[in-house]
Image 1 (spheres, helix red, strand yellow):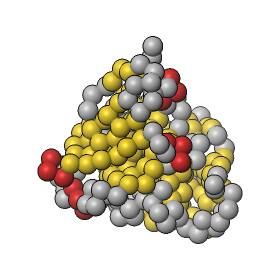
Image 2: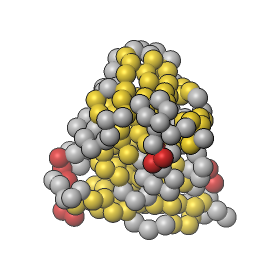
Image 3: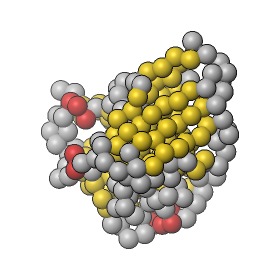
Image 4: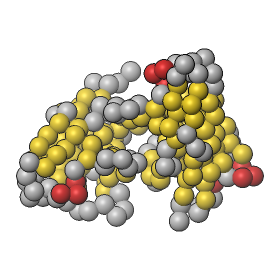
Length: 119
Length: 108
């Protein structure tokens, strides 16, 4: 069965960076895009970008351009999302999600990683 | 940028009711729209893609329709387990995406 297991909660200071991992299993890692979506407390979903695990190509939402970097390590079927220059309003649950039949949609989701930015 | 506006922002209905949630795009997006359900404390779940195609395993009481700028998600007979927040999502040819602001559905 498809599983995405994310790294644990993080507490960071403003200005720092955070790197969240997403380990995939149960399917061919290089066969499906991985999207990243975040959700601030009590708020809606915000799409951040995707990575093609096969090629390493990425596409980031405009709101995150210059601050987000998505990478992958195919040898361990793991995708990463690094967000830099953290602000308090970056406090959120960050999800990785595997694409579905339509590469733009998200069919399987990780459990989420809570990132708290606080001085 | 194309904006997605959902309505209503919240809604309360009785078990067995027919429920409709609307999503409007500021410009035409053909049928490039998906619907997600997020129950309290859970990860989102995709219900519908390509505006009207039901994701495998999703109950048939859920349906989607629309094209261009106006889309609807319909629950034909509301069940207690349908309490959730529902999001529309438009997606683009470069696989980027934008979510609507969500509609909170409760049981009356």
